Image (cartoon, rainbow, N blue to C red; front, side, top):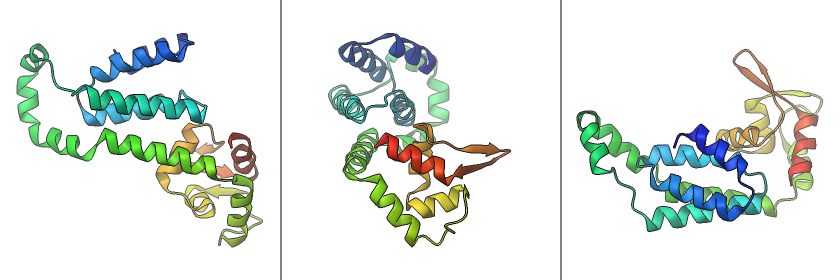
Length: 186
């Protein structure tokens, strides 16, 4: 099932049990660790509630542990030449993209952010940041420095709805909009 088809089906289901059943079927058909991590990352953008995100991640972890992912023999035969030609790249990606580790980091992130009081932390960071207090429009780097977060965390927050402005290839953030958004989501 393609990711677009999955998302469409996911959005039509209202019961978490049905969604988890769909998730199980989909995870069992993804062989590549890189594809699985990419899929899970996209899935988390559909889930807004942090507790539901935890349920989805814990369920995904369970499925990944219970059902070893492997190429079906008929599919392998059809793509055997391509698999053999790219074996080194594939094996490197299988090690590099560890779904278990990725899931654990996401769960840690959700747990850590749930414990933060963004208002207190946010204002403390504003006053200790080298970014000018008067400056309203911030670059990615300035916002990362202001909030003391990594690029991946900033990207994840953008995907979760953090307001931003694109000008060509550059991305900017209005400081007031970002802090209003942070206060609403936590």
